[in-house]
Length: 398
Ligand SMILES: Cc1cc2nc3c(=O)[nH]c(=O)nc-3n(C[C@H](O)[C@H](O)[C@H](O)COP(=O)(O)OP(=O)(O)OC[C@H]3O[C@@H](n4cnc5c(N)ncnc54)[C@H](O)[C@@H]3O)c2cc1C
Image 1 (cartoon, rainbow, N blue to C red):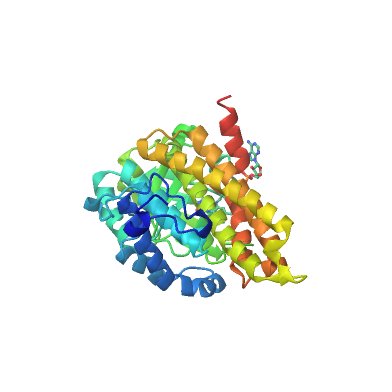
Image 2 (tube, helix red, strand yellow):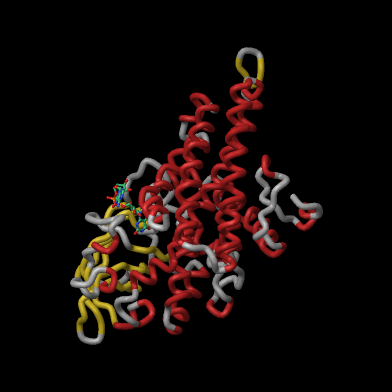
């Protein structure tokens, strides 16, 4: 940490990165982070195991986070948000990783993605009617791109929004949707012109309480057990023309592409914080656990492996922090964001695998947070655009 930062209450707080404070962490962000940490320790951490067993996070927890000012911190105050920058949201996400809940709390989708679609592209009435509710936690938001038949190839979605009088009639099916059980609003990717590829796509704001909308199973996953990830069905759902994000059809693909760098960086930020948290837990564990008359930490293999891992975590942090600064400056492009997403999540998986190994058999027991973190991490290489797609995007610029 920089001199004086402890006094101002700033800094990451990860034990092995005590001397580091990201440049994007202004004093205001540091104060926000500290408040977030206290809130999460008191209000979220005690419930993680219960949420993991029930398969979703209590709706009341969303509202508590909203009322305490932690949802939508990067949305202007005039729309009910915190009036900060995306750095505030990233600090919050890092703290969610720190209590080992991570992406199981779908607020990256809600505050980091959905709220920004509304802010960037919504008409004034759309912003005014939805954003304050997202910020208070009254409304939980999801984004519906993936369908049973298509994920990576987004332009091939089959969900249709057909013009019908003053509005549209929607039919289709989505799957793997984060916040699927809790969501009150979904930003739905639908074809308004099935003949056109990219230009035929629109984003529709669909109230989940409308007739014809139904929720399928809360899907059973190998990790992220506290996350409600679901199938959703749309059968003859009638919406008014007010439901088209931005008020004009055919803009959906452009809107999606525009927001992707931020979405990918959000995953990378979580990956770095997850690595750091996992390493903190592991360093403590190997110092306490003994074998052959000495601490596990004292074996040279343990020390060297951890030395490598903390180095990789630090390299990842410096790179990802540079990306955050670029995002704040408006200069983060798709290529660099793709690099951050694939590389940070790859390293996250490698580092957490080592952490499990150094925990021995306990690392495989669900009651140990490191086991949960390891299974939670796997999907980071899959969602938000798979890591193979990230490499495709990078390679296009070569
Ligand atoms: C826990 C979880 C949460 C999710 N949350 C959401 C959500 O909130 N909203 C949402 O819309 N979606 C969500 N998803 C879906 C996720 O974004 C998709 O699973 C992902 O984009 C991959 O799509 P797919 O599963 O159809 O795989 P496919 O596209 O079928 O890919 C299968 C394999 O083929 C590879 N592949 C595909 N195309 C290429 C190519 N051109 N070159 C090389 N390799 C290729 C892929 O990399 C992958 O390895 C979530 C998924 C999970 C598991």
